[in-house]
Length: 120
Image (tube, rainbow, N blue to C red; front, side, top):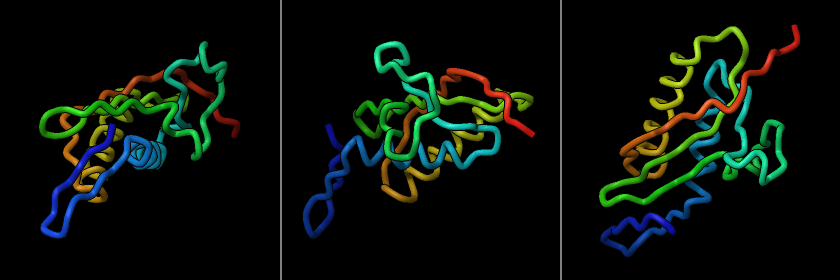
């Protein structure tokens, strides 16, 4: 599926892969986020932090009537306040989707898949 934006010159089609990349980039910019996690860790056999080219495996995008709903699967840093980090992810993802793509995020759900201790 894709989000189709109608303009006076025609239509613009933004795929879920592009939306997932924007969401993953926004989420990993937040202090306290170590990286993205796979939404199906057992099936994908991934127990590691996803790299930039695999952000779509850690993001689920669902089309809704007047926007999108996004699920973000993250790994947070040990010692950070998880609720605060998750709220920051929600705000940044929503802002980036609206400014970069012109797509309205109706909901941004953050799932913490793990906590990592970073070396000093």
